[in-house]
Length: 335
Image: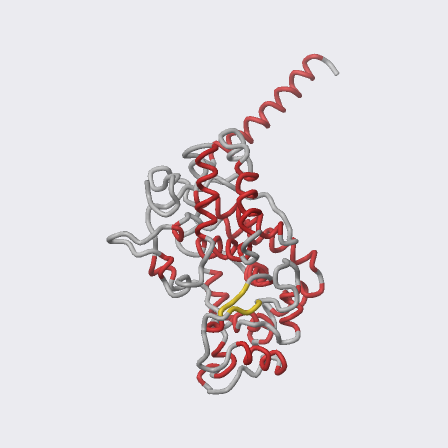
């Protein structure tokens, strides 16, 4: 190779590096990138991971709870950590809205991760990014896929209580679910894949009693629910019983991230109405039902789609404008 050719090759390589660097620098104001903290907090991922491993020793539910926090955060004014803010005069927290109150959990673990990161690299890693990192780690440590988490979000200075009232609900039918996802530029594959997050974790009786005793105001059980499974759930959640009793979202492998969620739906054992709707609703037959079938038959297909859909969800209106956001030093309050 001639010297001039070598110089050209080196110049091209440098130019390529500069382009990549520019993209990541651009991430501070508009875009996200995987290596956002490589220079400013290189151990951020491992720091969060250790906090989660420690938390899981005493709380087997924590991984499912943390991915739910990320989901509920992103679906309300974007992935900006707004869910983590406590109520203050003039601003009611999203934590207190019906979809979150007494059911969203894991805030103490987020606080612990934040404290560890503040000790290692003060004022660098946002709470919104902690949620994104924690969600990926939670899935991976539970046997699920891994993916490159895009980072560079800032934290909001506001919480949107009213916006959180419109989160996807366990009673939603497939049409409502599709609309809520479509409003955030998420498609049917995203809907079915992200619903697969219900392959681990627990749900309170209060969210399933209507299916057991008064489906759609009929004073009858949901006819799509497998009769044996309904009998089992009725024992755990008797009419007028304790609505806070917990039930496995996936009765087969409740703490493992796998595709059994879809296998359960295939045999009418989706525990939430919103789960079973993806397969059993007449309106699902040409849209979400074939995707359920695919994921039930191929865990690899589910894992690949779930990873991509988590990235898609993480890109919902990320706050990257320093004039509007900040890196909170305490996830529960603005600086």
